[in-house]
Amino acid sequence: MKLIAEGAEAKIYLNGNKILKKRICKKYREKELDVFLRKTRTKKEAKLLSDVKRINVKVPRLFEVKNFSIEMEYIYGEKLKNFLNKNNYKKFSKKIGEYVLKMHLSNIIHGDLTTSNIIVKDGELYFIDFGLGVETKSLEQKASDLLTLYQNFKSVHPEFDCWKYFLLGYKRKETEPVLHVFKKMLKRRRYI
Ligand SMILES: Nc1ncnc2c1ncn2[C@@H]1O[C@H](COP(=O)(O)OP(=O)(O)O)[C@@H](O)[C@H]1O
Ligand SMILES: [Mg+2]
Image 1 (cartoon, rainbow, N blue to C red):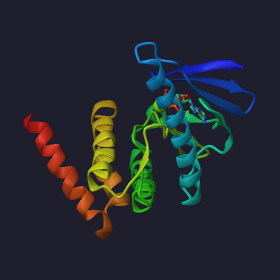
Image 2: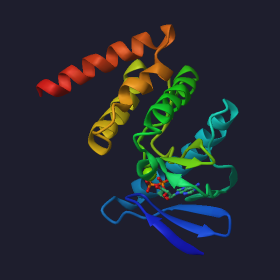
Image 3: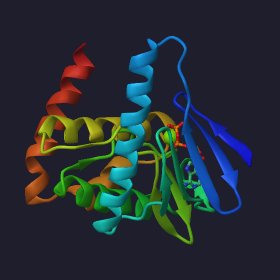
Image 4: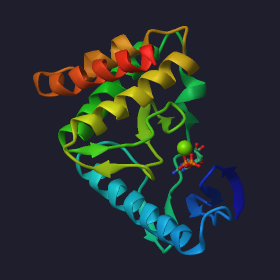
């Protein structure tokens, strides 16, 4: 097993064609709270992976869930963050819009929508990292999902107008109320 990534919350190991995402103990958190958060986030992430798969959004296949770890399919590809360029950003941004639309129409919030949490494999987009995700009808939570992605686009890919193409995939009669709340959030953020 080889350690391939270490985030704020988890260590990611690669074992053949499988990934082990293991949530690590945070010393600064009180012990019981730490155990509770790691367990619930692990469970939630596994549940979201299987729920999202059912609505035909591509995610890693789930192999095994334990208290603090998830074993899943290794998506052998490239992070969208490093793959996006002037020739493909329109197509991929629109695709992200279509997939996020599917999730939001099913009341699934990813929670950390960034181009680091999307992997491109064979021209297809795979979403990973649902650890901060939730299932809710809340317009505010859907809008803040959008805000995270909007800010990621602006800060990581400022040379491309990803948002314009994202909206081509996301904007529908049903998502108008979400976009309305999103715009209000954006204004508030600008004047703070
Ligand atoms: N199923 C997977 N297939 C391929 N790479 C993965 C997979 N899961 C995680 N990774 C890699 O590990 C990194 C961190 O995993 P992630 O789930 O995003 O955790 P974190 O919460 O630390 O960001 C990802 O950015 C990606 O490079
Ligand atoms: Mg991540």
